[in-house]
Image (cartoon, rainbow, N blue to C red; front, top):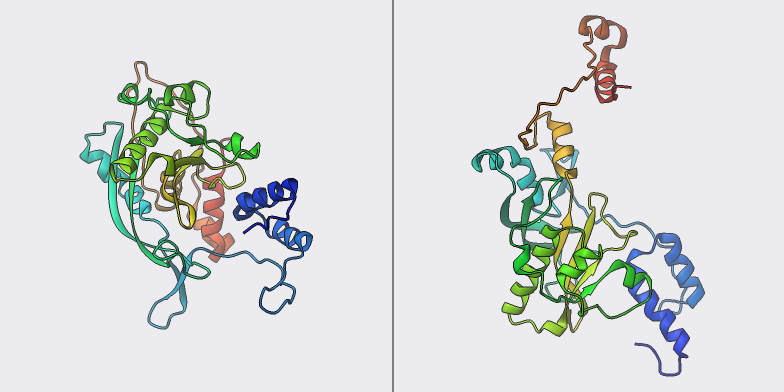
Length: 302
């Protein structure tokens, strides 16, 4: 809690740190601790330097436990792995969606906040696959008039503390606050779902991830957050993951994970592919031949 004796500018500074703390690097955290003179509240001793924390839940695999594995932090990868089967089930048509419910695991520093920050939890995920060249949604017109409390990355960077609830979803799309119709449609559907669950509208906001917290696989990301006794808590995430997951699984498994778009006119493509003489390769590079093959296969045409 901020003491009443603090000056307004000091209060604003502390509030900004509170908002940004989860996105600080280790160096920024150390500088902040030093600047504010933070010490152990029980002993008064100085704090150690910040260290990176791995949210992946590590585990030992195999009869002797010599292999390292990780429990899944999300359920979505099961959907991506089955993409080929799912799109065949949908007769190759796009867009389509798949949903699943399952257990997820996170390596929390110290489980707390009731059932919110635990190491094992049940989660549900929907993956909606769209044509990357056409992210319009046929039902967007039904929600374009809705006004959602949007807490954009720009507003956060400007130090604002309240979400903008005066903008319709259609206006948000036109102004580039929300990137595409599909994202906007599902933000609205989530808002309707949360209010139908009985959550008051003034306790809901959609916070956009800023550039320094955006996941490596995401083009855009909005968290549906609900204000509770613990503060604003994320209850659902909306992320435009592009084709990152499918591309990575395809690279590793060599199984084609993509949809086809019929073209009016055929397009001729010329590619260069190296056919290696495996007999010579084995004699020259022996146990390293797999690395050589992979290196050459990954080269671009140039």
